[in-house]
Image (cartoon, rainbow, N blue to C red; front, top):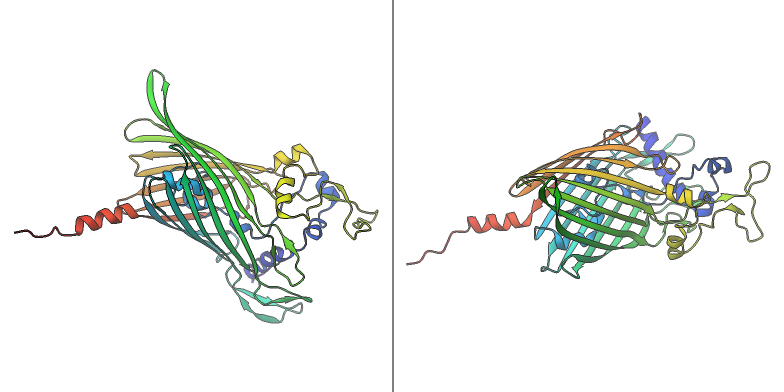
Length: 419
């Protein structure tokens, strides 16, 4: 019963949060914002959950990681530089498992190189909140439903030079949180949105000298603006909210210690490109004051009810706390990765978010294995603070190598008999 109540709350928090942006923002008290407690909320936040285990084990860093079968999530441009011609990846994450047993995220990603300069990729993401028993205000059952969200992606990447590539992706998003459930007079329906990604990637090699020895250094820089798309609505009143349009930039460097050992560092910086909540004017009773245009009067910040492109640009200067608060909206991910003979990996990372913008701070650990035909990645999350809903988060990723399948088929095909 406790789990059902939690999940039901989770669903309706999502539904209520996607009401008209000004209405949602108006629920934040001035005193809270004076303390800079101003978390940015969007619809379909499942798009921001890291779906795979390699980046998940490196503090949620991955925009510049090379040889990535799950590049569709991080940075599509990387796939043209992958060592393998193609791969399929399957990932599974039991989500918030310290609170409820049946919320999960499943992710499938695949890519294939067309030639040395271009490649295509696709993915499917499915987020399930398990079964929920809906009731009316008197506790009478209204039926059971499985709230769920999904996203389907397709993308193309092209290498413009020996070291630089660009990518573009298209995404369909569907969020069905309550089926045909009706709340008051507003019918709740599934939300739909269309979005796209624009990505870039640069990679190169050099040599560095340390203590008289020369080492190979592989390095890369990545950038991606993801989920550039239409707002989403769940009700017949056409209340809409931004989806998580996101800017991620990062770098990666790997030193080859010797023939068998290498160690790498990755750093990502991440920012939501959606409007910040302003501070609204209130009377002595704490009630929001509305102007002659029937909109709430804003004391500090900017109106968040703006078109998509304007909202993306505005997100860099609209925080009511000024430049200091804008910096607080940037999350930092750092990760280390050690490989032995390109077959066994150990990983660790740290994720930092301002206490005024969500306060997610956690360590991550993981391992990876590469066999002839497939690979396996695992990650585990350890929060800095106690009783965090993300604690004990596990991710599992299984990768199938197209090249290995092809080579096995060739080995198993008998040579033609000649006389």
